[in-house]
Image (cartoon, rainbow, N blue to C red; front, side, top):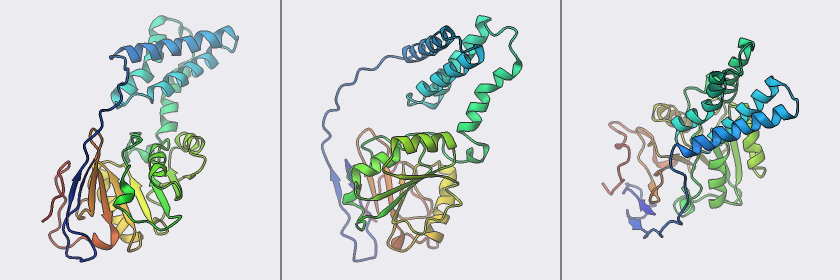
Length: 289
Protein backbone atom coordinates (compact mmCIF):
# COMPACT_ATOMS: atom_id res chain seq x y z
CA UNK A 1 0.00 0.00 0.00
CA UNK A 2 1.34 3.44 -0.84
CA UNK A 3 0.10 6.65 0.73
CA UNK A 4 1.04 10.14 -0.44
CA UNK A 5 0.09 13.34 1.36
CA UNK A 6 0.55 16.80 -0.21
CA UNK A 7 1.96 19.74 1.76
CA UNK A 8 -0.58 22.47 2.44
CA UNK A 9 -0.50 25.85 4.13
CA UNK A 10 -2.53 24.57 7.09
CA UNK A 11 -0.45 23.64 10.16
CA UNK A 12 -3.03 21.11 11.23
CA UNK A 13 -1.87 18.66 8.61
CA UNK A 14 1.32 16.63 9.12
CA UNK A 15 4.30 17.01 6.90
CA UNK A 16 3.91 15.16 3.65
CA UNK A 17 4.99 11.57 3.95
CA UNK A 18 5.10 8.58 1.71
CA UNK A 19 4.60 5.13 3.16
CA UNK A 20 5.10 2.01 1.14
CA UNK A 21 4.28 -1.41 2.48
CA UNK A 22 5.81 -4.43 0.87
CA UNK A 23 2.88 -6.32 -0.60
CA UNK A 24 2.39 -9.90 0.41
CA UNK A 25 2.35 -12.33 -2.49
CA UNK A 26 -1.30 -12.73 -3.47
CA UNK A 27 -2.95 -16.07 -2.98
CA UNK A 28 -2.92 -18.05 -6.18
CA UNK A 29 -6.31 -18.21 -7.81
CA UNK A 30 -7.35 -20.72 -10.34
CA UNK A 31 -8.93 -18.98 -13.31
CA UNK A 32 -10.23 -20.36 -16.54
CA UNK A 33 -8.65 -18.86 -19.66
CA UNK A 34 -10.97 -16.90 -21.91
CA UNK A 35 -13.30 -17.87 -23.60
CA UNK A 36 -13.89 -20.91 -21.36
CA UNK A 37 -15.84 -18.79 -18.78
CA UNK A 38 -18.19 -17.61 -21.54
CA UNK A 39 -18.70 -21.15 -22.84
CA UNK A 40 -19.44 -22.38 -19.32
CA UNK A 41 -21.97 -19.58 -18.70
CA UNK A 42 -23.69 -20.25 -22.03
CA UNK A 43 -23.86 -23.96 -21.18
CA UNK A 44 -25.44 -23.16 -17.81
CA UNK A 45 -27.99 -20.88 -19.49
CA UNK A 46 -28.88 -23.67 -21.91
CA UNK A 47 -29.12 -26.05 -18.97
CA UNK A 48 -31.54 -23.65 -17.34
CA UNK A 49 -33.60 -23.58 -20.53
CA UNK A 50 -33.75 -27.38 -20.74
CA UNK A 51 -34.54 -27.71 -17.05
CA UNK A 52 -37.43 -25.26 -17.21
CA UNK A 53 -38.72 -26.89 -20.37
CA UNK A 54 -38.79 -30.24 -18.61
CA UNK A 55 -41.05 -28.67 -15.98
CA UNK A 56 -43.55 -27.69 -18.69
CA UNK A 57 -43.29 -24.01 -17.83
CA UNK A 58 -43.64 -22.98 -21.45
CA UNK A 59 -41.20 -21.61 -24.00
CA UNK A 60 -41.54 -17.98 -22.89
CA UNK A 61 -40.92 -18.64 -19.21
CA UNK A 62 -38.01 -20.96 -20.00
CA UNK A 63 -36.44 -18.39 -22.29
CA UNK A 64 -36.83 -15.66 -19.65
CA UNK A 65 -35.25 -17.83 -16.95
CA UNK A 66 -32.29 -18.73 -19.16
CA UNK A 67 -31.72 -15.08 -20.12
CA UNK A 68 -31.78 -14.04 -16.46
CA UNK A 69 -29.33 -16.82 -15.60
CA UNK A 70 -26.91 -15.75 -18.31
CA UNK A 71 -27.20 -12.09 -17.29
CA UNK A 72 -26.53 -12.90 -13.64
CA UNK A 73 -23.47 -14.99 -14.52
CA UNK A 74 -22.21 -12.18 -16.77
CA UNK A 75 -21.91 -9.90 -13.73
CA UNK A 76 -19.05 -12.07 -12.45
CA UNK A 77 -16.80 -11.01 -15.31
CA UNK A 78 -14.45 -8.06 -14.60
CA UNK A 79 -14.64 -6.70 -18.15
CA UNK A 80 -17.74 -4.84 -19.41
CA UNK A 81 -17.28 -6.20 -22.94
CA UNK A 82 -16.99 -9.76 -21.68
CA UNK A 83 -20.08 -9.25 -19.54
CA UNK A 84 -21.95 -8.16 -22.66
CA UNK A 85 -20.74 -11.17 -24.65
CA UNK A 86 -21.68 -13.60 -21.88
CA UNK A 87 -25.13 -12.08 -21.41
CA UNK A 88 -25.84 -12.04 -25.16
CA UNK A 89 -24.57 -15.56 -25.80
CA UNK A 90 -27.73 -17.48 -24.98
CA UNK A 91 -30.24 -15.25 -26.82
CA UNK A 92 -28.08 -15.20 -29.96
CA UNK A 93 -27.41 -18.93 -29.94
CA UNK A 94 -31.09 -19.55 -29.29
CA UNK A 95 -32.02 -17.49 -32.34
CA UNK A 96 -29.49 -19.30 -34.53
CA UNK A 97 -30.71 -22.70 -33.34
CA UNK A 98 -34.07 -22.27 -35.02
CA UNK A 99 -35.99 -22.99 -31.81
CA UNK A 100 -37.50 -19.54 -31.94
CA UNK A 101 -39.17 -19.99 -35.31
CA UNK A 102 -42.77 -18.88 -35.12
CA UNK A 103 -42.22 -16.91 -31.92
CA UNK A 104 -43.73 -13.48 -31.50
CA UNK A 105 -41.23 -10.71 -32.18
CA UNK A 106 -42.02 -9.34 -28.74
CA UNK A 107 -39.94 -12.05 -27.07
CA UNK A 108 -36.82 -10.68 -28.70
CA UNK A 109 -37.43 -7.36 -27.00
CA UNK A 110 -37.09 -9.07 -23.62
CA UNK A 111 -33.28 -8.76 -23.33
CA UNK A 112 -33.52 -5.07 -24.23
CA UNK A 113 -36.28 -4.62 -21.67
CA UNK A 114 -34.14 -6.28 -18.99
CA UNK A 115 -31.21 -4.05 -19.92
CA UNK A 116 -33.40 -0.94 -19.73
CA UNK A 117 -34.67 -2.08 -16.33
CA UNK A 118 -31.15 -2.56 -15.00
CA UNK A 119 -29.78 0.62 -16.61
CA UNK A 120 -32.57 3.22 -16.92
CA UNK A 121 -31.99 5.95 -19.49
CA UNK A 122 -31.66 8.52 -16.71
CA UNK A 123 -28.59 6.70 -15.37
CA UNK A 124 -26.72 6.40 -18.68
CA UNK A 125 -24.63 9.49 -17.94
CA UNK A 126 -23.34 7.92 -14.70
CA UNK A 127 -20.80 5.15 -14.32
CA UNK A 128 -21.89 1.64 -15.34
CA UNK A 129 -21.64 -1.28 -12.92
CA UNK A 130 -17.95 -1.45 -11.95
CA UNK A 131 -17.68 -3.09 -8.50
CA UNK A 132 -15.25 -1.85 -5.85
CA UNK A 133 -12.69 -4.55 -5.05
CA UNK A 134 -12.95 -5.88 -1.51
CA UNK A 135 -9.70 -4.58 0.00
CA UNK A 136 -9.36 -1.41 -2.07
CA UNK A 137 -10.33 0.90 0.82
CA UNK A 138 -8.35 -0.89 3.54
CA UNK A 139 -6.28 1.69 5.43
CA UNK A 140 -8.63 4.56 4.64
CA UNK A 141 -9.41 4.97 8.33
CA UNK A 142 -5.74 5.85 8.93
CA UNK A 143 -6.07 8.85 6.63
CA UNK A 144 -9.64 9.97 7.35
CA UNK A 145 -10.86 10.76 10.85
CA UNK A 146 -14.59 10.18 11.29
CA UNK A 147 -16.76 10.63 14.40
CA UNK A 148 -18.35 7.66 16.12
CA UNK A 149 -21.31 6.31 14.16
CA UNK A 150 -20.52 8.59 11.25
CA UNK A 151 -22.93 8.72 8.32
CA UNK A 152 -21.19 7.37 5.22
CA UNK A 153 -22.87 7.46 1.81
CA UNK A 154 -22.01 5.38 -1.24
CA UNK A 155 -23.46 7.54 -4.02
CA UNK A 156 -24.38 5.17 -6.84
CA UNK A 157 -23.88 1.99 -4.81
CA UNK A 158 -24.72 -0.54 -7.55
CA UNK A 159 -24.78 -4.04 -6.05
CA UNK A 160 -23.21 -2.89 -2.77
CA UNK A 161 -19.55 -3.77 -3.32
CA UNK A 162 -18.46 -0.30 -2.19
CA UNK A 163 -20.60 -0.55 0.93
CA UNK A 164 -18.96 -3.85 1.81
CA UNK A 165 -15.50 -2.33 1.34
CA UNK A 166 -16.50 0.64 3.52
CA UNK A 167 -17.79 -1.67 6.23
CA UNK A 168 -14.39 -3.39 6.40
CA UNK A 169 -12.92 0.00 7.29
CA UNK A 170 -15.69 1.46 9.48
CA UNK A 171 -17.84 -1.38 10.88
CA UNK A 172 -19.55 0.98 13.35
CA UNK A 173 -20.47 3.63 10.78
CA UNK A 174 -24.03 4.20 9.61
CA UNK A 175 -23.64 3.11 6.02
CA UNK A 176 -26.09 4.30 3.38
CA UNK A 177 -26.38 3.77 -0.33
CA UNK A 178 -28.41 5.30 -3.11
CA UNK A 179 -28.96 3.66 -6.49
CA UNK A 180 -31.23 4.63 -9.38
CA UNK A 181 -31.59 1.14 -10.86
CA UNK A 182 -34.37 -0.71 -9.04
CA UNK A 183 -32.91 -4.23 -9.60
CA UNK A 184 -29.47 -3.20 -8.36
CA UNK A 185 -31.01 -1.41 -5.36
CA UNK A 186 -32.99 -4.50 -4.38
CA UNK A 187 -30.00 -6.81 -4.81
CA UNK A 188 -27.76 -4.43 -2.84
CA UNK A 189 -30.30 -4.40 0.00
CA UNK A 190 -30.14 -8.20 0.11
CA UNK A 191 -26.33 -8.28 0.00
CA UNK A 192 -25.96 -5.48 2.58
CA UNK A 193 -28.80 -5.86 5.12
CA UNK A 194 -26.87 -3.76 7.66
CA UNK A 195 -26.96 -0.70 5.37
CA UNK A 196 -29.77 1.69 4.46
CA UNK A 197 -30.15 1.55 0.69
CA UNK A 198 -32.65 3.70 -1.14
CA UNK A 199 -33.65 3.94 -4.75
CA UNK A 200 -33.17 7.46 -5.99
CA UNK A 201 -31.09 9.95 -7.93
CA UNK A 202 -27.68 10.48 -6.35
CA UNK A 203 -27.56 13.94 -7.88
CA UNK A 204 -30.94 14.97 -6.46
CA UNK A 205 -30.37 13.70 -2.91
CA UNK A 206 -28.59 16.15 -0.63
CA UNK A 207 -25.16 15.16 0.70
CA UNK A 208 -25.36 17.67 3.52
CA UNK A 209 -25.95 15.26 6.40
CA UNK A 210 -23.12 12.85 5.59
CA UNK A 211 -19.65 12.80 7.11
CA UNK A 212 -18.15 11.05 4.07
CA UNK A 213 -19.37 10.50 0.51
CA UNK A 214 -17.78 7.74 -1.54
CA UNK A 215 -17.89 7.74 -5.35
CA UNK A 216 -16.85 5.48 -8.18
CA UNK A 217 -17.91 7.59 -11.14
CA UNK A 218 -16.66 8.44 -14.62
CA UNK A 219 -14.20 11.25 -15.40
CA UNK A 220 -17.00 13.07 -17.25
CA UNK A 221 -19.23 13.20 -14.17
CA UNK A 222 -16.55 14.17 -11.63
CA UNK A 223 -16.89 17.97 -12.18
CA UNK A 224 -20.57 17.64 -11.30
CA UNK A 225 -19.66 15.68 -8.17
CA UNK A 226 -17.16 18.37 -7.13
CA UNK A 227 -19.74 21.12 -7.53
CA UNK A 228 -22.30 19.17 -5.53
CA UNK A 229 -19.85 18.36 -2.73
CA UNK A 230 -18.69 21.95 -2.35
CA UNK A 231 -22.25 23.25 -2.36
CA UNK A 232 -23.79 20.73 0.02
CA UNK A 233 -21.21 19.06 2.27
CA UNK A 234 -20.24 20.60 5.60
CA UNK A 235 -16.71 21.76 6.45
CA UNK A 236 -14.83 18.93 8.12
CA UNK A 237 -16.40 16.21 5.95
CA UNK A 238 -14.78 14.07 3.27
CA UNK A 239 -15.18 13.24 -0.41
CA UNK A 240 -13.53 9.98 -1.50
CA UNK A 241 -13.26 9.00 -5.16
CA UNK A 242 -12.07 5.67 -6.50
CA UNK A 243 -9.67 5.94 -9.45
CA UNK A 244 -10.74 9.34 -10.82
CA UNK A 245 -9.57 12.66 -9.42
CA UNK A 246 -11.79 15.61 -8.61
CA UNK A 247 -10.95 18.44 -11.06
CA UNK A 248 -9.85 21.65 -9.39
CA UNK A 249 -9.47 20.14 -5.90
CA UNK A 250 -6.23 19.48 -4.08
CA UNK A 251 -6.11 15.96 -2.62
CA UNK A 252 -5.60 15.47 1.08
CA UNK A 253 -4.08 12.06 0.35
CA UNK A 254 -3.89 9.25 -2.17
CA UNK A 255 -4.31 5.62 -1.12
CA UNK A 256 -3.08 2.95 -3.51
CA UNK A 257 -2.78 -0.78 -2.94
CA UNK A 258 -0.65 -2.73 -5.44
CA UNK A 259 -2.74 -4.08 -8.27
CA UNK A 260 -5.81 -2.02 -7.33
CA UNK A 261 -7.29 1.30 -8.36
CA UNK A 262 -6.08 4.44 -6.53
CA UNK A 263 -8.31 6.15 -3.99
CA UNK A 264 -8.36 9.97 -3.97
CA UNK A 265 -9.23 11.62 -0.64
CA UNK A 266 -10.46 15.20 -0.34
CA UNK A 267 -11.05 17.08 2.92
CA UNK A 268 -13.85 19.56 2.31
CA UNK A 269 -12.39 22.10 4.74
CA UNK A 270 -9.24 22.25 2.60
CA UNK A 271 -10.38 21.76 -0.96
CA UNK A 272 -12.22 24.93 -1.94
CA UNK A 273 -11.08 25.60 -5.52
CA UNK A 274 -9.06 28.74 -5.96
CA UNK A 275 -7.88 30.76 -8.97
CA UNK A 276 -5.65 28.75 -11.22
CA UNK A 277 -6.40 25.46 -9.54
CA UNK A 278 -6.16 22.44 -11.79
CA UNK A 279 -6.53 18.70 -11.63
CA UNK A 280 -3.46 16.49 -11.53
CA UNK A 281 -3.01 14.03 -14.40
CA UNK A 282 -4.95 10.84 -13.85
CA UNK A 283 -2.82 8.12 -12.27
CA UNK A 284 -0.11 10.46 -11.02
CA UNK A 285 1.17 10.36 -7.45
CA UNK A 286 0.59 13.38 -5.25
CA UNK A 287 3.91 14.59 -3.89
CA UNK A 288 4.80 17.60 -1.69
CA UNK A 289 4.72 20.90 -3.54
